[in-house]
Amino acid sequence: MAMKKVMVSMTEAMITALEKDRQRRKLDSIPETIRVILSNYIASNPA
Image 1 (cartoon, rainbow, N blue to C red):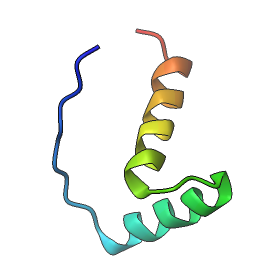
Image 2 (image 1 turned 90 degrees about the vertical axis):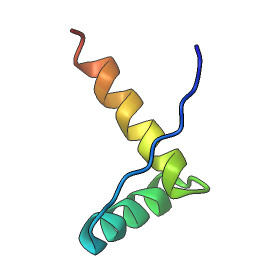
Image 3 (image 1 turned 180 degrees about the vertical axis):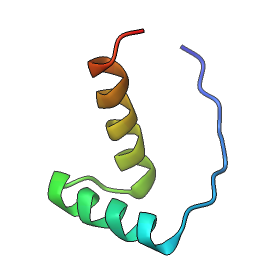
Image 4 (image 1 turned 60 degrees about the horizontal axis):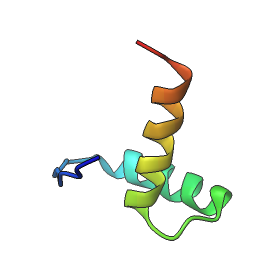
């Protein structure tokens, strides 16, 4: 699977929520947290 980079803008509230989730999941970075959340979401909602 090819990877593509994307840039997004987020509010401070979104970043704060992601940071809390990152710490809860014991992940290394915000991008990794976003990948995990999106992966879980996509896996639980088959199209």
